[in-house]
Image (cartoon, rainbow, N blue to C red; front, top):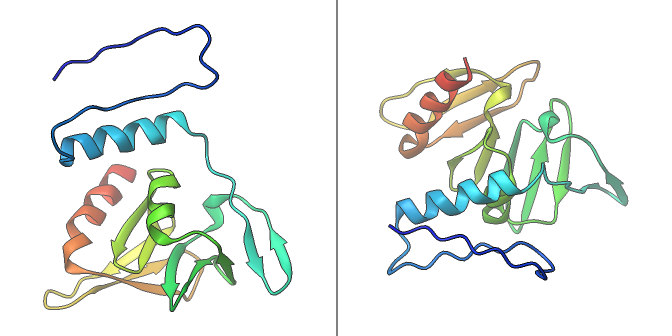
Length: 150
């Protein structure tokens, strides 16, 4: 792999171009690292009825899809968000992790995991009655991230 940096004085905005034969795990990892490194914490708008809410991402326990909508769950409330889950997956800081096809959770808010060897495992959160299921495919990654957190 070659890496080349070009300095262009009159560039209106920094641009990173990745040239590759195919998009593989390494390329996706580089892309994700660049996105996380270059962006500050995204500012998201949360909606409830006719009101817009602005608060820190740390308050979000998890995002989940329900029908055509994506919802952000806090300890005691639910807000609609106008982004798709795959868009959030690219925007959110690294302490958010996809744990199923329909859920991204905040690993900083995880209290416990009730492991089920034959089905999805159940995640419980600090100071909340809310729970989400982690699919078997994502369980190992979640445990690794939780161990890094400690």
